[in-house]
Length: 339
Image (cartoon, rainbow, N blue to C red; front, side, top):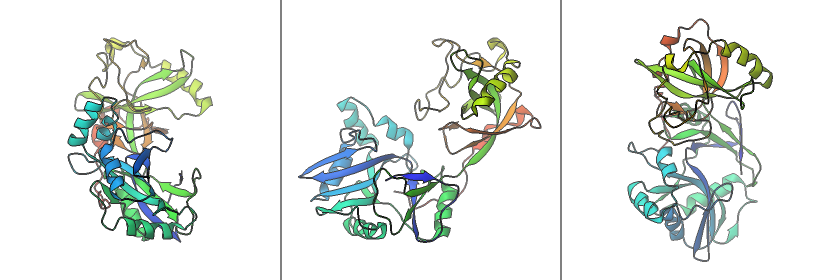
């Protein structure tokens, strides 16, 4: 069951839950065996044996919908540590389960005690889930849920800095509808004024594929992400504008590379990525770092946008050196009860 992205939380007969920052997972217990699989059907039990063991403790036959998380040093979910758990070596999996144990946060139930529950309303399924997990086994938790809109909005304000991506709203009367976007998800959108430090093209075509974004961290220009969601007709016009501002690499702050240190979340699609002149050909055009644009983003990891930012407007009124990394500082807010 999927969710469509909306700008605000719906009001009325809805229940609200945190949208946790982990791996979506269906956990099926049947005949003494446990199967964990991702939304796209990828098997997960070999990477998270402790989660499979927790599901097995429930006994009987059940199907739970939830999220696999890994706690970080601060106690909240750590997506980078979760990614590291997807390792092919069995010895590494065994070590990581000790060092960064995973847990399963359940937020729906499709079957319990052999009874199929997809046709039941969400409120009825939630009641069955609460009864099933009244005393959950170690490594398994029940997600918080509320029908109080004010509480849900506080959770939304904490999103991005409390281990959650946003808030999911579920219609109280709806059955479980696999593959349908019958739920609503809302994510906070934050903005930052960034330096436009370079751009990439489509295989040499005179069209901008992505804009490389940066922020000043003291005397260092940090690559924080990309902006690739551009209107098609704008890509060629923007190429002509930006190409006129190109500078030789040796005159650019990134002449020795950018993000050559390891990203806290690896090479995710759309993330800031890295470029090392020692090992990589120049696949981007350096620009004089004096052009500023305002972008919208959803969340950061280690001072980098996790997903491509969205271009909002150009800021000719801003001095590029005033665009500093402290714009990405965590927002103080009240998180939901952490798993």
